[in-house]
Amino acid sequence: MTSSPPAVGATAPDFTVQNQHGESWSLRERVADRPVLLVFYPFAWSRVCTGELCGIRDDFDGFTAAGAADVAAISCDPMFTLRAWADAERYDFDLLSDFWPHGAVATAYDVFNADAGMAIRGTFLVDTTGVVRWTQLNGPGKARDFAGYREALAAL
Image (cartoon, rainbow, N blue to C red):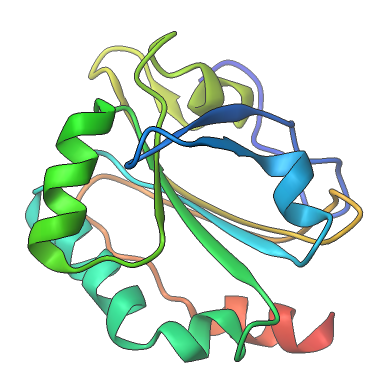
């Protein structure tokens, strides 16, 4: 990490990657319809990451405010790994692959740990104009507290 992650009020870096189904996923296109919660995480299948994403899965209506927002989880894992993990854990939301160029999206958000080849736990709520409205950073092994996200989403 060389600069700093996009702060509240900053324009979110746009990107296009593939989801776990090999479909193209563009931030610009997604936020045109509704706010998007971007959830960067280190690795599929790891204990804390699985716990966090299962928490999103189990309270999906709470995270999407009954369709008012979208959730996308992003890691540097290959698409096929994300597909197997999504199928095994029954994740119905998009898992985005930042595999190649490796960590390019995480780097744009300044949440890429180049020494470990992974994203740190960065979380960004992006509104329909492409502006960051809430953010949270967590170190390795430290789960997120999504309480602030729910407040930020309610304020949109």
